[in-house]
Image (cartoon, rainbow, N blue to C red; front, side, top):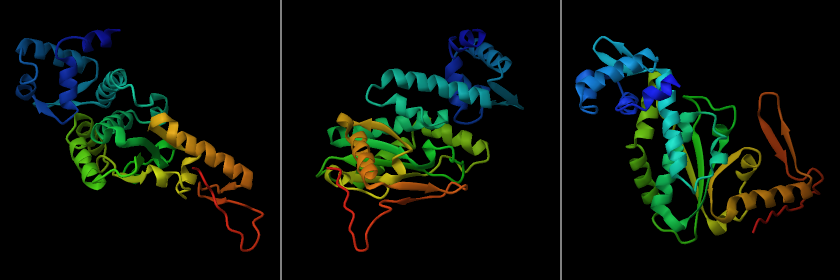
Length: 264
């Protein structure tokens, strides 16, 4: 309760948000919290709570302070967003990733509007295997047929994303922890009609995916139909102790038999 009281006071969250972007001196923070007495009190209170620390003449965010700022941002974004599936979003273990990807999705929705059908996160980001410095963030999005200039528009979205507080704060914090910075976001996009055809990468999404945006349940419907088809084929998934796995689509397949999977 004491911490909540401190964070509700003038300037407290502003200081945390600024220090999430990098260390700062008093005069730099004074540009954000312009009342010198108020700033002095906030810095003492935040330091006493272990949310910031002072090294020489500069102030820095602590791990607890970063987590607190991210939690506040996440609560605010959740209240503001009504088209993102927050139940799917929590499949990501890291709060910094939930907050930053929520901002990225918001930008994709803003850019593509009604042309955007689904956004799906897959791969290590929704598993226990995500490793900073080694893992990418894998994102698939589906667009209506005929959507134009996709690569140029995606580039615009990512340039804007990299200028946001969410990206910059996470990038700074990850670098301060010895990582290379924000993980590379690897994207794949499909037109809706093509998405209805079986894609081998869908096998990776059957058990581990987070469908963050899904108009009329389009992608979840594809996964449901794929699961039904694979069950009828007797498909099996074999996983080794090291986590490497393979699929046998039809164990009793006859020589020369062709397997066709339709999801449309």
